[in-house]
Image (cartoon, rainbow, N blue to C red; front, side, top):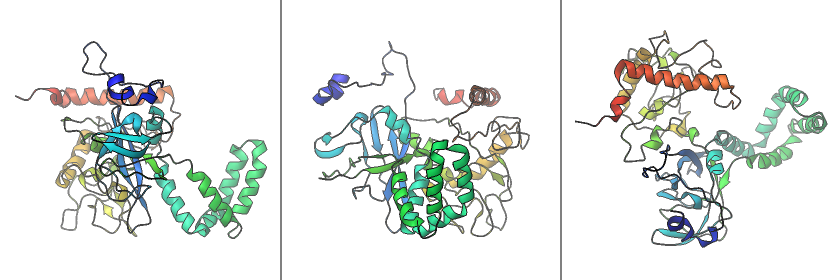
Length: 396
């Protein structure tokens, strides 16, 4: 594989360390799970100040934007249409003949890049915050001024002693509504560098560029955090098992799915994590009030649209969503939390199993609890209904 797929076509890589994926079809080798990292690439959308995201799939064999989203990349090109051999991602397009492309590349795309971009959860928030603050630096200066006491406390308690004086002086100047604006603009440019950026060219309609500009990338979870939509890009996948461990506690809510008569469908007044409703075409749950929807509202309807990133995530019929909510609640024990839709030992979003996925310092005990929760959920559900083993039985 190394010779036929990589080094014969790319002699310059013959001396490089190249990691290959273990062929799952070889009966003499241990079968391994197929790795898919979900990332996302920022696109400039017409008629909006926001930069939205397109899903990027990274696998051992191919990486790219498989669909054809709207918007343009960092070079003004329409993205999508497929992928390239993964080691050749992050490259500048020169020309192509048949299915082979000639590209310029400073280094190969690596597993480090895949894991890094698929974990860049902060990028979507920062990118659009920075965009707004650059357009109106006074807003950022006012924000810093309002939170000066909190920032000052952080400086005193978190920074090394030798760095506190300079940081406090920067805070004093930046918190000034007039003096701080030019300094804050410079700071924004520096902070922007923590967002991953790579060269990208669309396989559907590639064009060479004398000065190619990079595009910025973010965590794929900013678009769809269950992995279900990504797996449906593969025609040979018939069944999907998705484990969702969110911070949002599944609990009764004041609103549900509208019944069309001024009320809500029975059994749907339930709050679930924001990643689930968009799979059925619904916006995530909102608590009503000024500028908010009441419960679950379809995209394109209601008084707000606060989750535009999720608007294209629908893969199931909207009519199935009420039954999903009813089924989740019933499976959990209808409030007793005794069965494996979810379990709570304490009613706190910071207690098991509702650990923040932003926290990368979970203890061995916490990690083992999460692993055993998944195992218990499978065994309990399988014992009750055979729901998992039935996915692997040959249809008669």
